[in-house]
Image 1 (tube, rainbow, N blue to C red):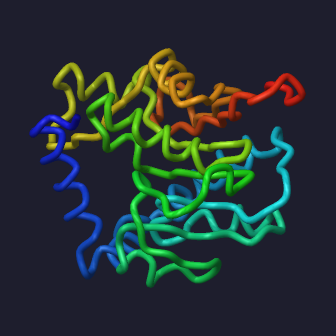
Image 2 (cartoon, one colour; image 1 turned 90 degrees about the vertical axis):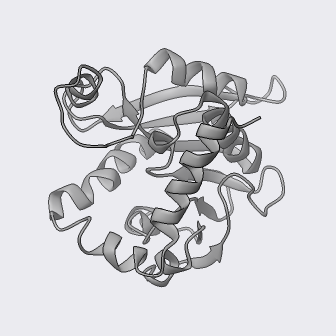
Length: 220
């Protein structure tokens, strides 16, 4: 059950990113630096070279303004872009668009060979919310789940934890062991992780493989 403070945090996040101008602001002001705008795509591309994808479309949830669509189009697959914010979805240029929550995906189990989740996990402070998100991503995945998160071992997160960084940034860093345990509880095995600069930059991507339901499916 979500505690009141965690619930309030979730509501605050939703209000911030679901507002009528959130899509325009996110696609312009948030990503004025072209190098920073491409960072998630580069890290995800590096991870996906290690994955063999089965047939079917891909799911990006939440998709934001569709920054990952260049990567997903490069896989020669159809993709579904899901986000809670209608404003964000208006900025998505390619792929099927669907409004909805990553915590309650409107799809059947094992629907997608790959599910990507960019820049949501580091907004969730409560382990219960983190676990719920990974369980839902794993449920609709047939094989792979790629998730971005903040590395608790990074200098950026350490400065905030020690009070050396000013501001009211509530983004949460995860220790690698904690992320592995969350994945295992959701039926996911961590295969590989990529950071733009380990121990300096917090932004990290991890590729999980769904744990086999039978002995015929190999692990990572």
